[in-house]
Image 1 (tube, rainbow, N blue to C red):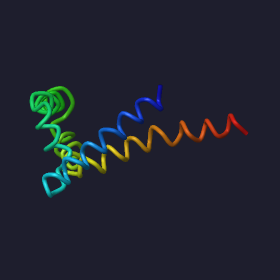
Image 2 (image 1 turned 30 degrees about the horizontal axis):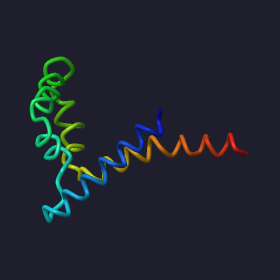
Image 3 (image 1 turned 90 degrees about the vertical axis):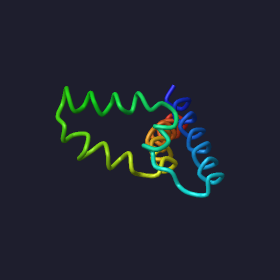
Length: 93
C-alpha cells in the first residue's frame, strides 16, 4: 500500500513539474493547493488558528506552503518509497 501511495506522489510530482515548466516558473505548494481547492486551504488555516494555536499556522505551516510544490511532493514520495524499498531488499536477502 505504501508503494502505491508513494507512486501517486511521484505522479503528482511529475504533474507539478510539467505545470511549472509550462508556466515558466516554479509555483509554491500553497499556490498549487489554492488552484486545486482553495476552500480546504482556508479551512486548514482557520482550523489551526481556532482549535490549536494561531502561531502554528504562521510559524510552521506557512513556510512549508511557500516551498516549491514539486520539491515538497518529491520529498514526500521519497519518504514513503525509500523505507518500502529498503524493506523489500531486506526481505529478498
